[in-house]
Length: 150
Image 1 (cartoon, rainbow, N blue to C red):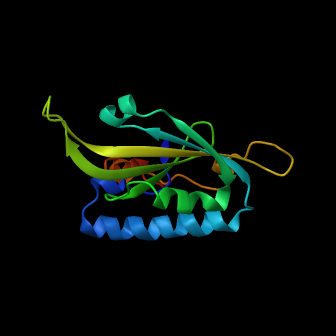
Image 2 (image 1 turned 45 degrees about the horizontal axis):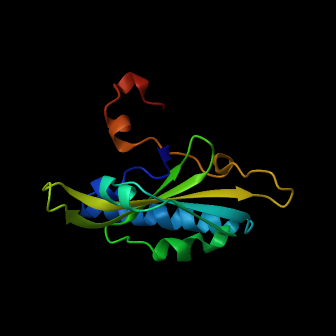
Image 3 (image 1 turned 60 degrees about the vertical axis):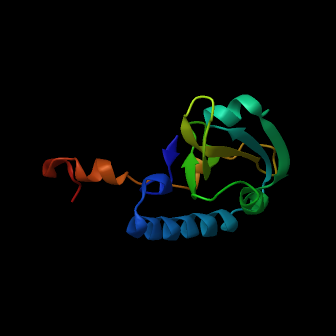
């Protein structure tokens, strides 16, 4: 999976989070400009504790409903948007932190919602055709100058 913005919100400082918010606004605008495709939302818990305790859930809906669906998740620490290797969209929501008493392990509730859409002809929508993945900041700054594109 590849981020559709330059840096994960979970790793961002205040200034970077402001840029992240602008990038997310652009992604939302672009998504809303697409047809309201029939979609499946696959909800999965990604953190170890909740992954073991919850069954994966699938919902049928329409593409533009994804924002209401994401708002119902634990998004206390923000949301990233990714493009999967299959061309689907994946929203990774970072929720509240927790500590497992028995082990002392701390983590954050992480929930992924993968959007699989089909067009009016029942063909799978490849969101890679609509969204470009930027080069992450750490890859931009770590390249020698000779590798930068002029």
